[in-house]
Amino acid sequence: MVSKDMGKEGSMAEEFSILDLQESPHTDAPRPVFYLDLNLNQILDKVTMQWSAQVRKLFLYFPRNKECEAYRRAVYGDVKKPACYEALSRFWEAIGKMEEKRAQEEAVTRPIQKDVWHLWTVKAYCDAFGKLFEDLKKAGPASDGMNEFLKLLEKHLTSKEFTEMRDRVDQILKELTGFRFVLTYDKDRIVVTEGTAPGDYESFMNQNGDADKVSFKSPFSVSPNLCDLEQECLNLLAGKHPKLFQALEDTAEKYREFGEEFCFRFIREIPYYLSYRAFQIEMEEKGYVFCAPTTSEEEQTSAEGLYDLALAIVANREGRKVISNNTYYKENESFFVLTGPNQGGKTTFARSLGQLVFFTKMGLDVPAKKANVRYYKNILTHFSVEESIETGRGKLKEELLRLSPMMQDGEENDFVVINELFTTAATYDAEIMGRKVLTHFIEQNCQGIYVTHLKELASVHPKVVSLRAMLNADRIQTFEIARSEAEESACAASVVNKYHLTYEQLKERL
Image 1 (cartoon, rainbow, N blue to C red):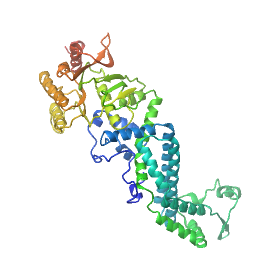
Image 2: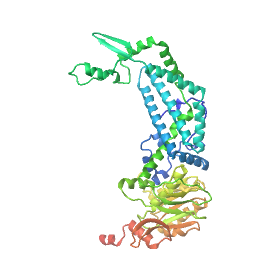
Image 3: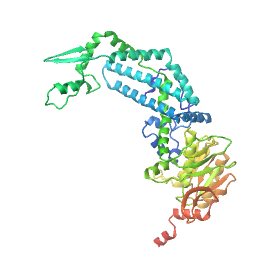
Image 4: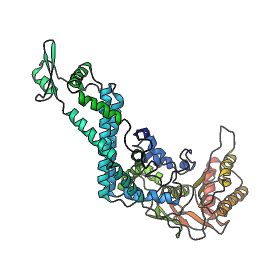
């Protein structure tokens, strides 16, 4: 990527961001725990596979508030429009070419070469943003973010400083690329003559050179650095055209730092949208659906055709089918308590709910046919952990240590995903602790889901809703999650299977 220091200090619109209406206060925070619990790391590996580590970091932080989430969602709505997406994709290709020229500038060692490649970099910048402005204007974006960017870009592109830089660089490069000279080798002399000769070096030598030689390659294309002969030729040309080469040096120095900071920030941030859009297009071509969620506070959180996106990525690779589910909260409902047999899709469903909230908060489309997601300040997750060999602490203690800060932060209106807590505790103790956890988060005005094998937790509070992983008539998992009272036999079967206590297993041991 182009480094930030290429932008001029104190330039206009330094605070503008296509990603954030307001700067997030957590830009240096570590990755939240829920990324691993919800398998978001697997999804983002896929999303950012063809992009840099800097792009991956853009997915680590939530926008500051509800308004910032809406700002980002509106921008993504523009990015999804074919004309806008094509314009941004062309722009990104142009930026790639600018990067190649910048890399050449860094690779060469001669000052005059550095100056020439720097002017090519400046020209690539001017051309890329000029074309982007034209294309985006035709695309007709609707979001505040894109329209503010266009307003700033138009002001930049029509400014005296920009037009003077563009025209001056174009003129010098035009004159430089107009140079042609002929090298004539005669015995022990090389004569340099300005002008042109028919054909190119390789063709001429292959026709007129030693027939025993297989092929001839130009000595001027071996390395980006000048060889001694090239340097001597350049010295002769510079001596004959001193004004042009002085103008080259002066112009390169004048525009050593060029452009506006908001433009370079746009380059750093726009891949956030482009990477996800490219991923979404790929998944949609394979039959998976996405939708732009509504965020009405007048309606409860709900989703139709919701599925686990991380599982979909793996399943598509392996040729397996992914089951989707419908879900909704009613008024005065806070928590789902999900029970049912092992391997019935409970954890997958819980993850899909967390992913639904995550991608909504990130201002992106969600893996569902239709969804409304109310505003939540944060996402809290707690998935069952193994005993720590390093600390020597048991599984229960590890769980309690991780749960403690979640319940002490005092935040309200979070979305909470809890999966199989207290499985090593006695049933009586696990029920008491589970009841306290649920009650705490309900009193904090949170919503969420609690996956458990304890059917008693499904009735601990009026705001708790019982969900169950369903079985068919043959008691085989369907992976459908539905509102239903917790079933004794299903919960018992879950425990029996978990601890290998089925009739066949016991008979085999005995």
